[in-house]
Picture 1 (cartoon, rainbow, N blue to C red):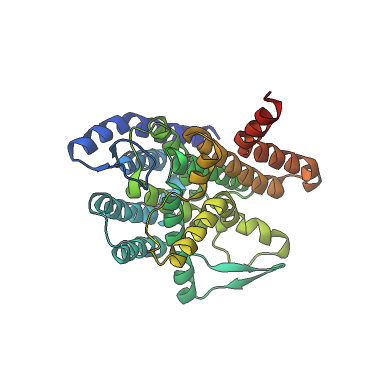
Picture 2: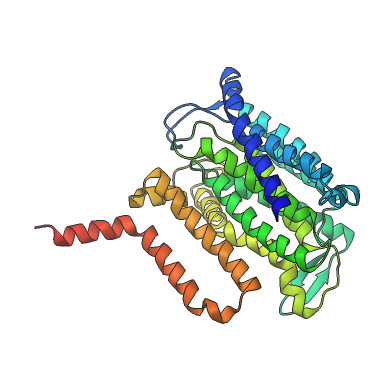
Length: 367
């Protein structure tokens, strides 16, 4: 565990130290996001934070490659190198998009290209679950399609979440922390199993935490599309690696095999639903699905009376609940969750509705 924590510390330190320099450079190059009626920030803000996130992640992976504990993940597999190559491609695309606002088809093509690089390195889905206790083994043709779709979906999911200061970095940190706990536990039980996944996950956690110092409200720098897509690709790649490469598993272990997919889906389920509703909303209004508005879930939380920070904390709480529930159902006796889970849900519901409840109580006790 200490070796993994060291990687997280390295990633966080590099990101923390580099971010002010990146912020200064972005201002000098005028790579900034200007406020408008569809955005919640009030001043022009640098958007090149993805560079610091990428540097922190790559720096930690470089350290990992020199450590005897992790050497096999680099010498016996090309998966991490594929994710690094794909991240570099998608980062370049994101920087151009932050500067020039690329057309959606061009952006999608770049995402598919980056995902294809990751797939060719060996990061691929070989099977999918078929409830209740079976699975479908995928041919190579279907595998590339499913893997690329998953990676592209994860890139865009993180991009969708990036609507408030610190929201995307925090949610990705929560998802990656839970995924690290899962994969670390598995590596302790099965020697050498999915070792690249916890390495990548803990570096993502460290980079996000180092960046949050500058990205939490009031943010002095945004991660931009470059950062959001890099995080989405890295997290998506880690989950695919975490599934394992063996196409045949017993019914008793089938659920465990697909937990790597379920955890990030659970954590970002609410933002994903929010994105789906946005697409439906814009389609009904005959607008482009890429047309920005201020009707997302986090905007509605602010309309309820939450401040910018507390709206983000509410989203953190729901994400942490989803992540914690996924881990609890995997590793703990489920009978112990009968009371704990409803209590946690109730507490977060109260926290979410606190501004409304406060107004009602004040109205009733007012003379």
